[in-house]
Every structure is written in structure tokens, then in C-alpha cells.
Image 1: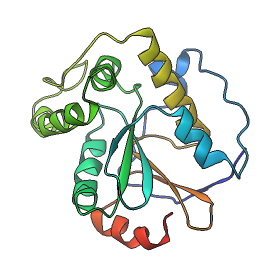
Image 2 (image 1 turned 180 degrees about the vertical axis):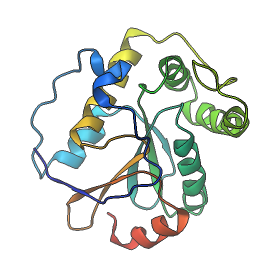
Image 3 (image 1 turned 135 degrees about the vertical axis):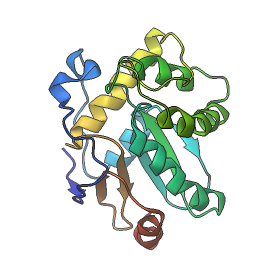
Amino acid sequence: MHHIVKRTKVFGILVGVLWAGAAMATTALPPLPKMSQNSYWKDIGQRLTYIQEGHQGPVIYDFFDPNCPYCHSMYDEEQSLIKAGQLTVRYVPVAYLMPSSTPEAAALLQSSDRVATLQHFEALAGKSFAAPMTASGPVGLPQAKATAPTIQALKTNMAILQTTHSMGVPAILYEHKNGSTGLIPGMVSHGELLTMLPNLK
């Protein structure tokens, strides 16, 4: 298996949510063929289901759960760099934090315009997380009944996230200019992203 360099960050990680206890993790996950160091970045790009914002600058993968408030903060930190043409972000939904995570992720992935739906979703997120949380998650985020292909895509996204040994979301996966792959578990500020950019491929 390709070795992933893990940069330790303790803030922004959703602790207390164990993979073994997560709803998506307890279902059968699709087998992932062994990925070599030389092909890992290309392989995950072909297997992950994501929503891409930006078409210039280095590419990073941002794993998120719709019910993760830190993930929405991460989205905000990335936006100015995307709009400036300095960064391309591939947002990779997973669904395990709450019962509403799957239908919310389905609303994103099954949309005819995923980018516009993600942007609308994020615009609503600030209000949703400011309101009291219910047992099933924040109120007001779009939901849809997940189709079989969507459920399979979410399982594959989760399986790949688990291979990185991240303990939660957000989780940022990136490629160095030297070809190695790195992982940052947890929040990354705009300033930290800006510092990283010259070293990313």
C-alpha cells in the first residue's frame, strides 16, 4: 500500500466517533485493489466520487461529512484560493456521522448541477449549524433518497478515507511535487493552505 505522510493536527478532528461504530463503516465496504506508490494518486482520482471547484493550481481532496461543522469551516477557508485560481479542491462526501448524512450526501451527488448544489448547501450550512441540533442532524440541509449507485460511491469514498488512517473529517489529501502523498487530518486555515501551495503538485 502506498505510504501516506500524515501531518498531525489535533484541532478540528471529530473525536469520539469511532470508525467501527459509524453507520457507513459497519456495512460491507468494496474491496480496494492494492495501490502502488507510483499510481496511488491517479488511482484514487479514478475511484473517488467528488465535486470539483476550481480548475487551476494544485489539486487537493477534501473529505467531508455533511453533518461536520468543521468541514463547512474548511470550505470557507478554501474559497478565496479557488476563486483566485490558486487551488483546485475536489470535495469528497462521506456519510457516517448522523442518520441524515446519507440523504444529505445523496442530495449533493444526485444533483444535475453538483457544484451549484454544493454552493447552495454551504450557504445554508451557516444557518443550519447556528440553530439547535436535532438527534438526526442540523435542520434545513437538502436531502434526497440515496440510489444504489450513490450508496456504492459513498462506501468507496469511505473505504479510501479509511486507508489513510484518518480518525475523522475534514481530512485533506494532497500530492507533493516530489510525488509523495500527504494527509492533514482536521482543519487547515487559509494561511496554512497558502504556505503549502508552492510545495504541492
